[in-house]
Image (cartoon, rainbow, N blue to C red):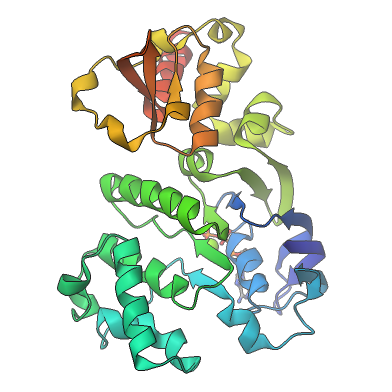
Amino acid sequence: MITFDNVSKQYEDGTKAVDTLNFTVNKGEFFVVIGPSGCGKTTTMKMVNRLIDPTDGTIRINDQNIKEGDIHTLRWNIGYVLQQIALFPNMTVAENISVVPEMKKWSKEKIKNRVDELLNLVGLEPETYRDRMTNELSGGQQQRVGVARALAADPDILLMDEPFSALDPISREQLQEDIQQLQHKIQKTIVFVTHDMDEALKLGDRICVMKEGKIIQIGTPAELMDTPADPFVTQFLGNRQVAADNKASEKLTVSDVMDRNVNLVNHSALSEKHTISQGESIETAFLRLNEGSVPYLLVKENEEVVGTVSYEDLARKWMKEREAQ
Ligand SMILES: Nc1ncnc2c1ncn2[C@@H]1O[C@H](COP(=O)(O)OP(=O)(O)OP(=O)(O)O)[C@@H](O)[C@H]1O
Ligand SMILES: [Mg+2]
């Protein structure tokens, strides 16, 4: 779907922001790019919709070199949620979302329906929010409008550059869950930049780890945990890596980490495949959480729900292991 072929970018002042990038993002994939500040994540992202042109190499979308097509068509087909939210402050929520559909000359009626549809999709009640000015919204609500605006013209690709980094942990977690659900519903190809490994592990089908303009490793969360390519990846994985390294942890099972407080949980949202039994290993739990893209699994024993297990439950246990060493 999106292919980088020996792509480099050197800025005019000589800064080599990215260096010989080679990778492919598959159709419908949730592809996370992670790395420390200044490693070239935003530069990589902006080359996809030609806000920045590479100094070397080729980027193709559906086998077409993006330099050869029409730049407006390209951008219309790519939704972009910026690192700093940039809603138009003197416009309403609906006007913000309508910008691209209006450029595409959709009918008023079609735009209005689309705005309401998108507001529902991102969890903002249209009646309440469509005519609000954007500066009257909370940070989390603004981010939601940003996502709605990026999706407005139904692009195939969504670029999201640290979209949740300015938010408090609770709104952030909520939006992470929402974007996961959204991805399941709309099946877009998403390139998502973060420097938070928890976020990457939770959201990514695959994760691309960058350092100083280069790709260090690309793999599924499990591949990164099992076979980190480099000490840098290990370091970036931090606490979580301990579980994979620590043989003792292989014997840890779901029953060691699960939350037995089942009353608080609304089970109806989860299907059968989002369950696990107490005797399974925590690695299996981790993989299943990731495959299912759910915030937690139901722990079942003889058809009965006996608890839940989440990323947080797994992380907490791993942290303890590390302290104990
Ligand atoms: N317009 C520019 N001119 C010169 N250098 C630039 C320009 N934009 C970015 N850079 C440099 O290129 C490198 C990569 O920047 P980039 O914004 O891609 O990093 P990033 O990974 O997105 O960082 P962050 O996590 O802080 O957002 C940095 O060293 C940065 O200073
Ligand atoms: Mg950036």
